[in-house]
Length: 162
Image (cartoon, rainbow, N blue to C red; front, side, top):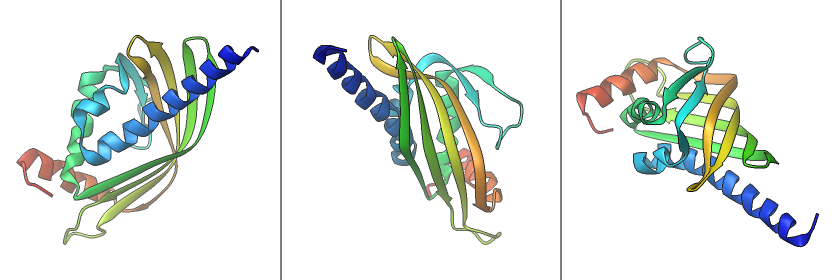
């Protein structure tokens, strides 16, 4: 492998890691424009911990619209770490740990839901950089109450700031 190939590999690894980190950051900062830049136009999503129906294909705009409901939480914090990246030409896979905190003070039980696990993200090199085309969340543990999601989604739909 020559130096220019090694350099390109390092640049690609950095760009892929940035895409996966931007995904988490955009959710927590509620930057929906940034979030949309992380995905190809059509994506395969699988989050069986939430919807145990296997993988589904959706438009990225529709996926982002669904994720916007997380704005009903007072705060979220999604930490993506330990990126393991494999590149094959214009395709790549990034496995990464997830630690996702969802916080909403309420008088109906626990104020939080915490999820741990790992992502399997398949990415594609595009003219606009690396984009996630497949996102699978493998939950391995959880704590707190899932009920805070119902409260947060209702707060979002009601337009209440948290």
